[in-house]
Length: 50
Image (cartoon, rainbow, N blue to C red; front, side, top):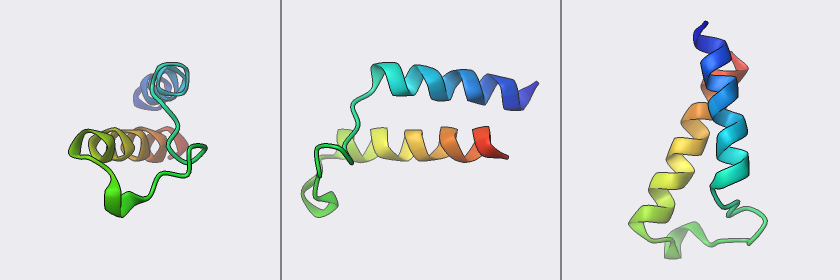
């Protein structure tokens, strides 16, 4: 059940949130909001893969 929820969240993240790797964002120059979005995407992706 938990895995299915995170897979759904991962699909929503891909559709809604911006991809900073495609934009080649420098992490040292990223704003707090951008870092929060990156952290959220990593958290969801990690749990979707388990």
